[in-house]
Length: 136
Image 1 (cartoon, rainbow, N blue to C red):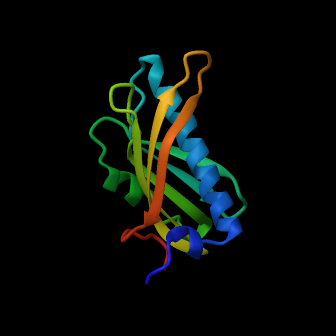
Image 2 (spheres, helix red, strand yellow):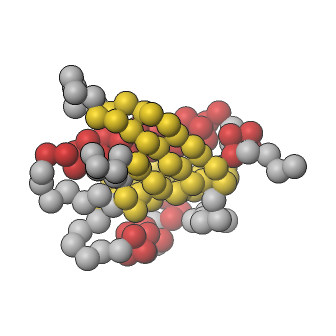
């Protein structure tokens, strides 16, 4: 029987993925202000541990976002691609990513907006193996 993603990912990989997901949830909150903020974006973690976001704009596809980092792949430790972070009518963030030192992953997080703060509560989450990869 194949092991789960969490069984194959070491503690450092899990911490890096948690950082990517926290940043993704922060960006999701940023889409609530009614601006034209994109619901698709990427979170990048470089080799030094710094997080950076790349937002989708206009008619950019998720493939366009990924293509924008392919040349920088050697400087990255992990990446999370979020084709749709959800909204208040459909509060589910769906994404996929890869880590240089761990298995690629798919993630689904169902969230709920907290009425008392600009934060999200996690209702349910799942992380599993992904067929998508960036690092060999």
